[in-house]
Structure formats: C-alpha cells, structure tokens
Amino acid sequence: MAAVSGTSSEVAGVSIVLEAVDEAVDTALAIRLMMPERPVIDATTRDLVGHLISLMAEELGFDADPTVQALFREGYRLLDLTRRPTEQSPHFHAYQYMRDLGSLTRRFADVYRATRMKDQDDG
Image 1 (cartoon, rainbow, N blue to C red):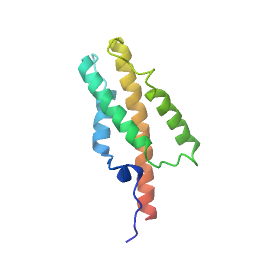
Image 2: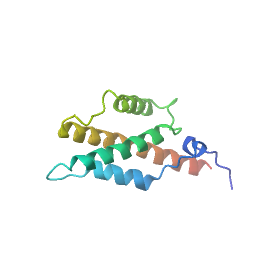
Image 3: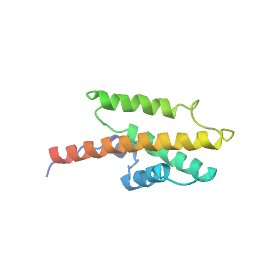
C-alpha cells in the first residue's frame, strides 16, 4: 500500500466534497422556465465561490498544463470582486454570473477528478 501525499485542501483542513460541488453546479446550471428567486441565486453563488476557491487551492498541474493555466486565469477573472454582482445588480446579471461560475466550477471539478484518479492509479 503506497502512501498518498496530502493535497492542499487536506493540509489546510478543508475537504472537497465533490457531491456538494456537483449539487451546487447542478443548481446553477439547471434549465428552468423561469429564473430562480434572487435569494436562491445569491446562496448558490456563495456556495460556488467557496467550491471554486477550494478547487483552485488544489494541485491540478498548473505548471505543466496550459489548459489548466487558462482555467485559473478565468477563475481569477471571475472571482475578481469588481466583477461580482452586488445587491443592486439586476436579477439577470446575478443569474448569469451564477451560471458562469457554475460552468467554470464544473470544469475545475472535472480536472480535480481526473487528477485524483491519476494519483490513485499512480499510488
């Protein structure tokens, strides 16, 4: 049995629960006839921001993979406080931001899953 080194989130005491990430992403990206109420959008956005920050703290091959580097650039751009909707932002702006965040978080989660599977195969 090979020893597995701790990930960034494990060292920091934060665990990534992929089921919670998937649930938040599914909520953000669900196809609806109407937009969700603003409190749902705001709560989902807060969840996604937390998940995205946790995923970005992981070792995902940033140094070697240009695709991952592009994901990080997009993540930093999207998490920029000046780009986030405020309480005064129009409902649709907050909704679109939540969906953009959900899409990017899903891509990060996919890279995280692939990285974890590779680590398990190598271990």
